[in-house]
Length: 142
Image (cartoon, rainbow, N blue to C red; front, side, top):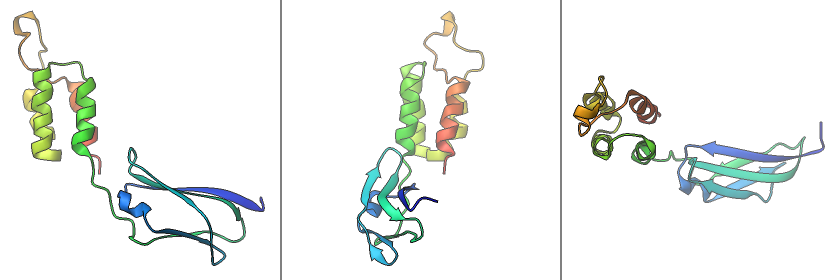
């Protein structure tokens, strides 16, 4: 076993306020830590270096670890923005997500057209099944 270790602890799904007031102790002594918040993953990252392996490590959060608000609408937008479909359909789907949240999933099937878009129906709105499946991952994530 090495005499000392470097640690990187990641606390996912927490609010940015959790990064304030972080204290790290080892063998009952305070130690320096690099604390950062990663907004893309909703994570607090705590890094410490050179901690004696036998001493252990304790991380405390003054504000606790409050859950982050889930950015469902932003994640749905990211899916829809890259989808190959009519802009009108994207607008309809995004409006449903903003209005209904996770309950939009059944509503998305109402704008699905199982027959597809052909030249006689090129202006019809169509929600492709793969896009619905991608949105389902976003909408059902906890």
